[in-house]
Image (cartoon, rainbow, N blue to C red):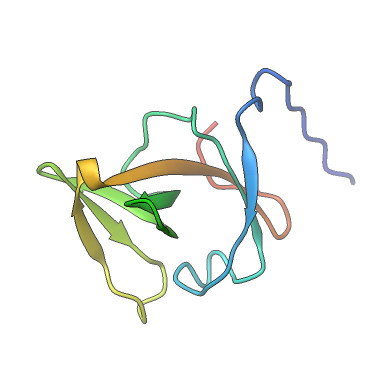
Length: 108
């Protein structure tokens, strides 16, 4: 039984893939895995895995939660700290696919 994926060009126009480096999302996402991000997949819901830009030079993958004007970034790996930022200090881009097998991480 094969896997069939149907993706229309209009749906993927702004998607991009990145190779993960680091263990903050282990065991869900491992270092070396590929993830696909979609800047147009809005709104971001509590608990979704996102690529996070903090300022201009720091990037991370974490789960996003909202709390009174702040964004809470929570890793799946308990060895890494939960972080809080004013929402204007970060940009979150939803991760829509995790390519180890092919796992869809975002709602359809």
